[in-house]
Length: 79
Figure 1: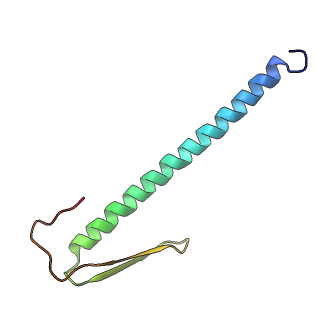
Figure 2: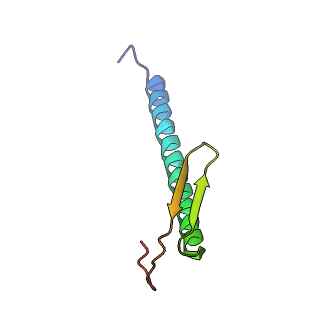
């Protein structure tokens, strides 16, 4: 244990834990953003008339296009 001091070991552990916590926070933020986006798209799609088309594009260039069928049943399944 002469080559590795307790201070160096503690610094390595803190650095690793900091990196893991940072990744966890980013993942949680991303999940919340995706959930919010999904909920808003569902609300918009439910408000559109049958046969309508919705295109959503993000700032990063990714997009989604939803086309609602002309035949929808009352009390349709959401989930």
